Image (cartoon, rainbow, N blue to C red; front, side):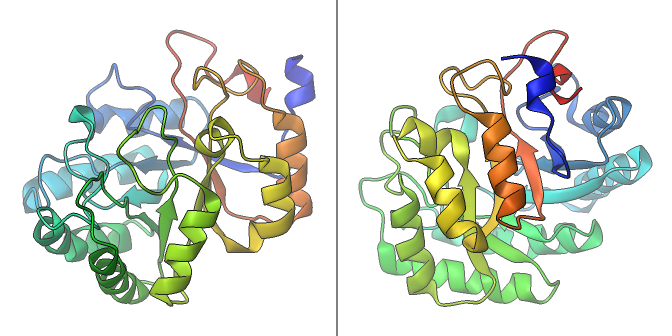
Length: 263
């Protein structure tokens, strides 16, 4: 795909600092994003536990502010992501940890002007749907205090075989059950495409339900243009459908040229 075919119009992009610039210490990544021309970033929960303490939170807040970027997306504590954990919402053995994290994450988000908080469901077996709904309601009520939206994400089962929410439809059912105005869908187009969903049709029909969008190309989870997904058309459809939020760059890329597709 020619790079000039990838022009993205009015799309606003942010860099996920948990998957890009990972060769740098966490506190140096916001400045690296700014150096590459980005004014917005997002993060998975970057600490080992639900409450790392005031000093660690202050250091991260300072790094973001001094870089001159805005935090536009933040995950709630999702457990040990590196070890394969994918959330705490529905896990009886993780619920208390999630609840301890709610106020900490919401406060950090509020201090940095972040209005999107991602709550991952959690791996099965043994997940509890009623527990997930209760925890989402608790998180949504706290997030409402800073004008933020809690988003629910579907992951692909090829890389996340124990994760129960693997389609837009399953995520929509959970969101409807939670019944809070500030709970929406995180449309990670890579995960959805890998599960065989028609992402163009999804955009056309359901953009109004999107609280955030994340992208990578399939196969490989590389930058747009590295796989088979029709990103010029995806960007055009998002714009035409009225999506005005940020698009999170959540792809893997080693070496130079990670952002050349934007030229």
